[in-house]
Every structure is written in structure tokens, then in C-alpha cells.
Amino acid sequence: MNNSISKINKSLTLLFLLLSVIFIIIMIVNSNFFAWTFARHQNILSWYIRPLFLIPLCFFAYKRNPSGISLTVFLLLTSMLWFPEPAVVNDKVKEFLLMEKNYLITNWTISKVFISLLVPISLGLLARAFWKRSIKSGISILVLIAVAKTLWSIVEGGKSGQAVIVPALIGLAICIIVIYYGYKRFEKSRKK
Picture 1 (cartoon, rainbow, N blue to C red):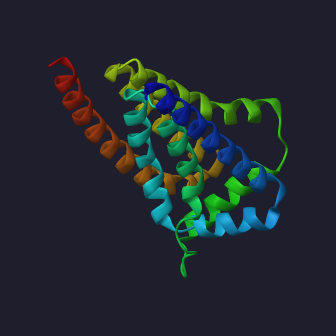
Picture 2 (tube, rainbow, N blue to C red):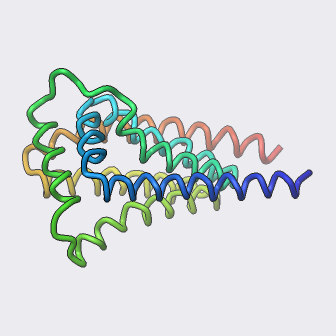
């Protein structure tokens, strides 16, 4: 039974990793899909929901469940298109997403590749911290992710980057509270 669960877990992990790669490739090669996705990402609800995916990422890492981690990454990637395109868009949001789109489609330098790789690296470090059940490291990495995203947004987007501050802070606060109390509860029951 354990062996079949392990095979299913490996298969699901590979499936969601493959789906994530396919989603990224479609975003890169299909400019219409890219534009459609970013139009829907103007819905501010997607900005508030995205940081919350760090909660199940940490949960599945704590439970040492790679298929749950890969599912969470896939859902995080696709969450920008879950909400309908809004009828009215805040000017800062519109300006910031235009900057972000341009950033993604122009001049891929070595430094831009390095900065972009920080996203999967930081998510990997976050998962590793909770896999090793280190609450201090995990929360420190959560804070660093939120600060880095906010700083990058302001540096690259100027005043429009300030649109990220409130969703990032609210998401960070919710993540820390839920993850901290969840961690304490799991650790208490694990030690019994």
C-alpha cells in the first residue's frame, strides 16, 4: 500500500510540474494568451489570493508531500487568470502590470535571469525550511519573499509598484498567523 501511494505521489508530482512548465511555455509562446492572462490579472482579487498559496505550500512541505507542493505551485501560477477581467481598473494597477508585462517580454539579460530565478529559489527554500520543520527559517523566508517582491515592484514600477504593498502586507500577515498556529498545532500533535 505504501509503495502504491509513493508511486501515485511521484506521478502526481510529475504531472503538476509538467502542467506548470506547459503553462509557462504557453505564456511565453502565445502572445494572445499572455495578454488575456494579464488582462484578467488586473482583477485585484488575484493580487490578494496569490500570497495565500504560500500557506498550502508550507503545509505540504511540512507533511513532506511533493505532489501537494507541485499542485500548489501550479495553482499559484494559474491563479492570475481565475478571476474575470475587471470593468474598472485602478490606474496604478494598470500601470504596474504594463511594466511587469514589458519586463517579462523584453531584454532578457543575465541579471534579469538571475533576479527571475530568485522566485523558484525562494519558494524552494521556503519548502525546504518547512520540510525540515524549521518555523524560524520558514517565517524569515516568508518575510524576505514579501519584502523582496515589494522592493522589486517599487524599484521597477516606481509609484505604480506601490500598488503591491497592501496585498503583500495583508498576505504576509495572514500567512504568518496561519502558518505559525498551524505549525504549533502540528508539532504538538506530532510530539504526542
